[in-house]
Amino acid sequence: MSTKTKIARSPAATSPGAGANRRPFTSLRDWLAHLASTGRLAVTKPNANLAHEVAAIAKVLDGRKATLFPNPGGHALPIVSGLVSARQWIAEAMGVDHADMLARFEHAAANPRPCEVVTKAPAQDVVELSPDLLRDLPIPTHNEHDSGPYITAGLIISKNPKTGRQNVAIVRLQVSGPKKLGALLLPRHTNLFYEMAEANGAPLPVAVVIGIDPLSLLASQAIAPLDQDELEIAGALQGRNLPVVKCKTSDLLVPAEAEIVVEGHMLPKVREPEGPFGEFPQYYGERADRHVIAIDAITRRKDAIYHTIGGGGLEHLVLGGIPREATLLGHLKRTFPGVRDVHLSHGGICRYHLHVKLAKRSDGEPKNVMMGAFAGHYDVKQVIVVDEDVDIHDPAQVEWAVATRFQADRGLLVVNDSQGSKLDPSTRDGLGSKMGIDATKPIAAPEMTFKKIYVPGEDAVDLTRDVDTTALAGWTKKLGAG
Ligand code: MN
Image (cartoon, rainbow, N blue to C red; front, top):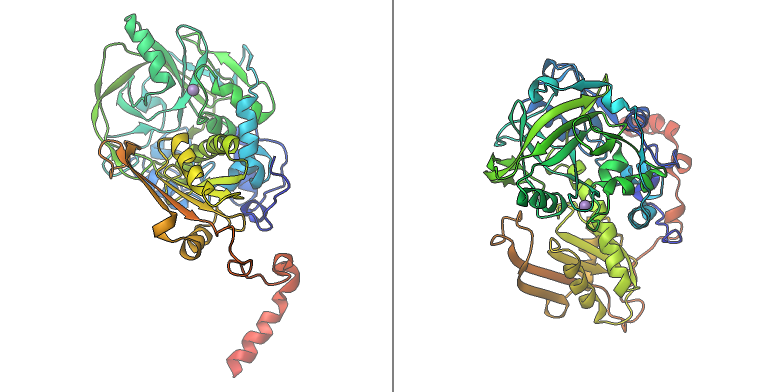
């Protein structure tokens, strides 16, 4: 879709190893090997402490390197974290240029591929029918005030009791006992299935998949309609019919190549304390009575790898942000053909602050685009609309556009008392304001007034060709001698 508008120095072009692989990655192990071969996997000393130390090291390396922890807390199974902690890495996992990533995701979401049921699966090499969560899995405790160990990278799979269609989501899971998890369900699909089951006094079977390829992780975050199985979007992203296998204690179908699967059922009419837990806005979600999952079995690969995601880290933010960007871009383009690209900024926790690149046709259009974006997702709190000559992925360039093309008396839009994110602590339980900033130049402005300066040839500079590294020693000596 946007293949023609290649940014000369896009992040993907400079990311190590980018472009080397043009096929999507289908396996966690291949992806980890690829990170290792491109200098992006750190292996720690063995026996890192599961209480805070694993999370602390992963946090420091987040965005730079994935981290592998051998024998964490003396446990046989290793932990990995930071698998996809930069947006360029996701483009790389998808096998596309960074500029084509959102279009590729949208295409996969619109063209899902059915899963293929298999009977033998590495995910069931080992079957533990008398499970004990902390004995069987290396589950870390992350933040200072977290209530204890949490499963943070678990894809929770459940089935619509009426239609039989499956759903995938990531929810935070508190270890509440050897065979018990506390879950925070947002008012979306898993919760709807649970309410259907609970109305009949029945439990809802669930499976929690831990340790999966990066594209399945990404697909789990798609803003998909009810009864669209996110595993089918994962298949479309991977370019294959995703192999799935039936659980040992339920009819749920889980990815056959998963590292670990925790099988269980969500109890009807039961609520127990869960939280606090450090969430994506980098604040704590409060303790309250929430859903409870009873564990029936744990299946895994023989040498399973456990995955953990730090709350509010780049891995967490980027995984949620890219599917949202793809959805918002599709939504805006349907009404505003001049919208070229969108970006949910890191500082806006990849949820709240949206940058929009617009080839505007009239001076009023940026405000219409803002209203469209606010309507596109209630989490969007601030929209900055810029022209085509601004790199919306570079916060300094966006700020430059605001500094030089925006005047608050005519370019500012404020909408009071609208629905926002309940996890934004500055709202009144989600009730908050929206702000739009029009940082586009006026259509009638003389061409030179807003013309960005440009040095002829700046895009063609090749530092490996134009810088003479062998000359430095001689110059250092000459300068020192002076
Ligand atoms: Mn869903």
